[in-house]
Length: 229
Image (cartoon, rainbow, N blue to C red; front, side, top):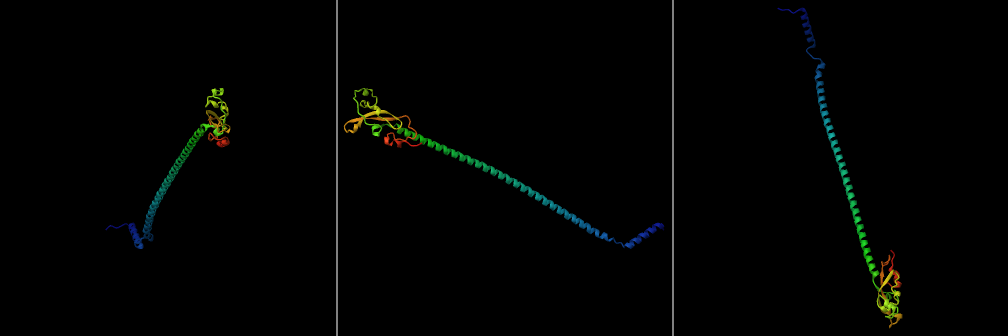
């Protein structure tokens, strides 16, 4: 039979003794090690889930923030557009108001010009309207002259027998008047029988400013034919 060396035998005995002493049990620390590892694994797993959740929250907050910024920019842009449109609208309204005001002013001026023109024509018509001077108080009934007298022969207006005192007629208080006719039909010196001469007159030129007529206003009423302008 093969025998082990003495040194090897000693080693085996020592090993057997160690196994007997230990009784095949592991140290207390070895029994606790799996629980700590499990807890560490669970903690790592939880931390991973928390990290992912935090990451999701961060992404969500970032997304919400971006959306809020986009909404704010959109609102700002809309406000700017609304302000611009309001300004344009206001400008158009002011332009329309200005145009309407100008139109009304132009219309008013045109109406005033037409009224002045109408009034001027009316006054001009009154100004040049012929009238008999004795009847209107612008002359006295004058005696006649012979039809064969030099004055009668030189007469160019009206009947020849009224030419002698022609210069005494058509003397108006406002402006000047020309003689366009004469007639022997007024009472000379108040006589009911003897007929004297009067002349038909017509004003010349343009009426003075403020004159409103009528053309045959009496001398006593001549002041009423003028108004301030």
